[in-house]
Image 1 (cartoon, rainbow, N blue to C red):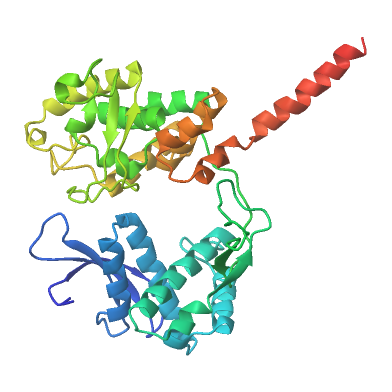
Image 2 (cartoon, one colour; image 1 turned 135 degrees about the vertical axis):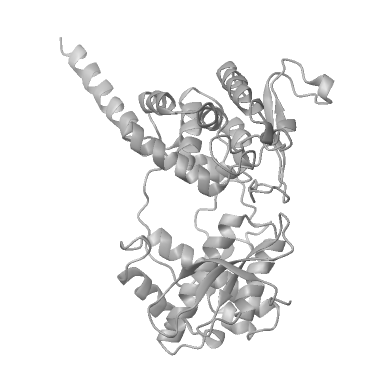
Length: 395
């Protein structure tokens, strides 16, 4: 693959010495929605061929732009560590990978704070996936990648796991090197915090984005990738060629969005919306239609308040919007918190777990099962309920 046409746009740098590798975002002069790529530069600022080809492979496999960006940074970090510690990544051993894990655990990440076990394991996962890619393409010996995982017997298989007629498939390949993780509860907003966040939204666009994500549980990439044709807010959409009853949105996997927004799941799904969401969309469309530059853009969320007017809202713009909102209402509000909040509200309202799975677009029921866990509020209420029952019985 020829890389000489690429122009540097922005980078992620790891290390402070001459052996530093960099993850760079590059742009083709030909432009177009698919012109941006992530590349790895070696210490001489030349393209690191294997690392860059791996990132190109991820792009071709429809991995999200955020996933590729994170993998690029983690791979640059690994290559920098190898160079700093005189380790040849092409023949890396389990002992060397264990040293890399220890280094990750004992040094600061970005921002300057200790890495969690989950972050360390995610970094190792990216490296192992890279080594497997290189082994499949005969860039390294197969045993280098093979020794990074080992058979693990499933004493308690997850629901739906098929062990075979005689249980012969009850083993999986697990990473040989991993860090201990401390399970943290997912972050959600209370109903009071939701009301405060919505009240602090300064524009109709930001308010609609917040209300839509809370009502549907969609990811930020799915929201930014919505097009006007996906908004079926009529009581009956059969005139639009759609048989889904009631107001709803369609979430579709597209690779040609100008803002690089990408739905994580390749499977399209329809999600119902309530009257409040429809009303917020009507208010937003009034402001959107008043900006002439936005008329030709089919994406729902566009720039209305700063240049370039009418262009699609980007991930960076959405990140800035949520940071401003957090400062204004005095609580942390992040896009994925809205997804967790929506799922939690559904579960507490008695919605069946399989319905929640479909709404969220989870392929595996295990991904949805985390919302069945009791929170601190539920645990406190349970204890107080029993205490109250005992007191009533002694009277």
